Length: 351
Image (cartoon, rainbow, N blue to C red; front, top):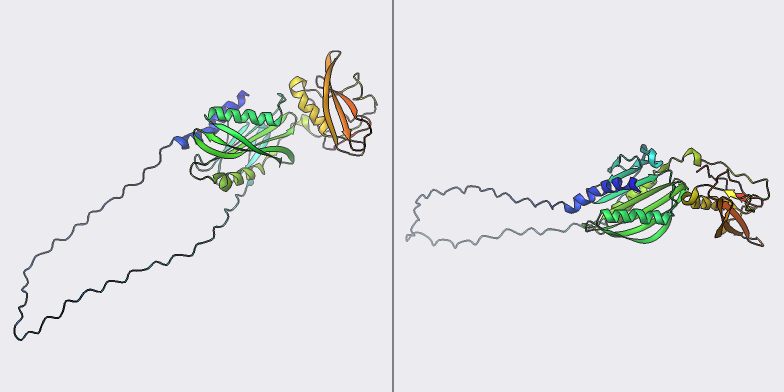
């Protein structure tokens, strides 16, 4: 998406500057010439021994000054770097991106002009963190696809590459998301970090990326990057559009609702936004006693002037799988079909 190009370029400026900046030359020690005082050569008579003179005492060999032996200080056991504390009392609001975020003291936070992106940086080129929110989102890509897309753009702009590693589940502001470990290079500098993607609603997401430059310290991500990135994530609060607010859960009175081609479940969203809206509906659907369900899309078929998707539903204790018809090209307030319930947090407003 074009809205990202400007923000990605801006977030890489510090990284590029740090990679290209010449190392500061070591200061040349200044030699201070201290004038050596010129000795005034005064002729001093050397006494001549006479008969009455006793033998000159033997020349004393100067006793060398004792050399100070330095006693090594006991080695201190290194203590863990204190975790940075997030400050959520002062916040940046990214209205176009659908979220607000707090601060971590000691790190500069700047909202970019697109109204969607915020960047955080510590020492120049050492750590870069960026978050970008998008709402409304109607392209219908999966979280993994969105992460792939962002990382590909970063790699292209930064003349490098990202290698994705382990994937873990995270929770941001009460919403589940995905975190992926990343390694690679940007502008020739090695990096390590993490990318995250959270979709609080089917039409809204937050992408985050934290990367540490490992040129000077291979542990830079563990020491600084990960703690700061985690603390910033803890301050995120989503601005969920009013159309996506919780609308509760009701069960249809019509026994044909969802079970027949003539009365499908109309989630809306069209070809791009429809699939994630279908998944959002089914993810909140439950069996008659609240049992978690599993679902598989078995295909689609044209019916009149629309196309219906067919999902096969199962849950523990169900004798026979149930087929439901969903329509992503039309919208009506959704309900649970007869024989099902839904999560009280179910929300799927107009697309």
